[in-house]
Image (cartoon, rainbow, N blue to C red; front, side, top):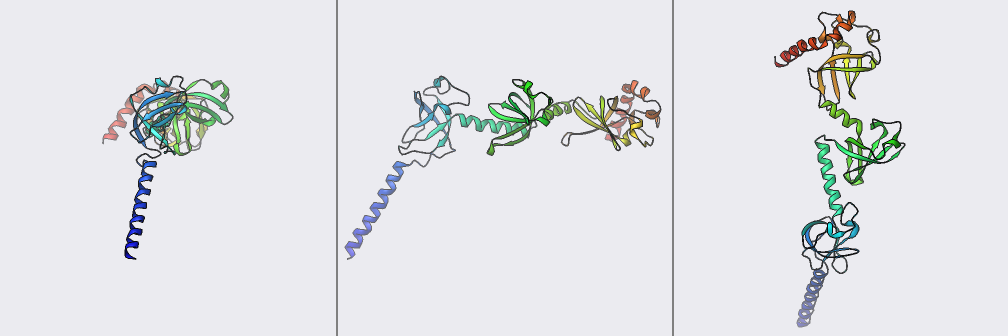
Length: 304
């Protein structure tokens, strides 16, 4: 009985090891979906190319996975015997062959690049490829993005934007659902912000008058002239002093690019309290000289 048990145990052990060995032959566990590998193309056919990546079997890259752009001659993007990097997109089949992609590797690298650009608040040029009521779709480094109508500078004739190049900034990047939302207005605002600094004299048109202040457009960026920064005297009604579309000059006293806010002042341009109310034309005509004096005072108070 004891000998029979030993024979049975050996048989069981032998079976388990053989089964494990066969499993190893069928599956090379070092290659997994999503893994980056290096390899060399050794054969090209009409359907794709065969790649040596150091496995038991060669890997295969289908023609449509060779590059993000359309390719006619595979050898132009998959040169023979040259080491390249690939992304595994399908694990081993019954013959132990994995499926590779260069196209999806490019897409991954583009997403990484776009995320870095968003983090650094950089803008990018895109080409409009389609338009609908809600906005326009664009080509951005080979990927498809969307600009909502509210974030376009031209909102009336979107069809006219087809084929045009636009400079945009990022509103939302979500690679998990392939979502890229962009803004032309934000890019223009960011570019304008980079040209502005505290102590600078600006000139712009009044776009809105509220009880608390006046909004001024400076090359696409909105600045606020708060009621307390208009004059050194009390004002009851700003509409008695300013009009929509009126051009005025003011001094920048604060910039918060993160919140998209610019504060300006005409109060600091006055030679005496209430001069803006009595003779705004004189204040505006000599604003440059007055701004130089006010700028020095701003710097002195900042350094104090």
